[in-house]
Length: 351
Image (cartoon, rainbow, N blue to C red; front, side):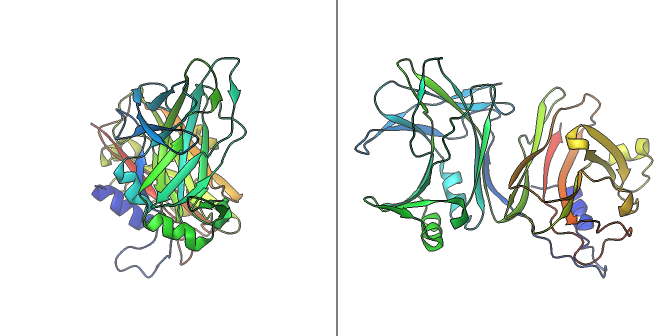
């Protein structure tokens, strides 16, 4: 459940305060479901499939410390002339039924030997009955651990989905994509990329199903000093035109005295590609807030912050936001109608 601080913070940033004449129509996506594999396998399993389509159950394990960052789901593919796939749990599949026009993303890394050869196969498949939408995102082959690649696909015709009815493969129409999503029964993500005699290994992390718009995702919900914390953004579709992006963290109120914020909410703005932090108070004029990046176009996927959590962090709830405005919109020091295009948030807790 989002904390009261998070709700207040979002309302203020989007100019939707009660009794305020400013009403902003922001488009922020919702994270419908995610698996970040911080402490376990999160209900994921694995299967192997032969050339005739016959399915055999397989196994997965939790691998602490090999994720992007944190933990990951690990599958060791057997050398059996079959192809391995990670099989999503029911809560991920259920989320797909509400994700039309949204996006699905995931991170992949592999472990292999020097002589292994990459082979092509379907990388992601969503099934409803005998109908499937599927996509190849390789080649090139995924990288070798500890390096990860992030794949992000919009759930629309612009993402290149193919429609398979059990016999024939054609370019998917939007109606076919929407129908498969609405009746989704399974999601599989490829878990074998190399032809080899010894088993090759695939590591899966940060699977996210999101609705349309801009969203932010933290890889943790609870954090301790020394943990790696990553904040990433998905934009499907990205806002049109040039925008300014503000990446800001609402701190627990206990920080207010030390930052000179009085009764105002203490903030930290992330700048310089995530390497610099600037403290501020919510009562400060908006034109004093430093931008993460100015006068730019947003990509469909980006990592906004990747950092080790500080030992100086006080207990409480920390709300992270990516605030998107038209380029230069806050230069007048006011938040007016249309100034906030999107302001998605996510949060984590320090016990």
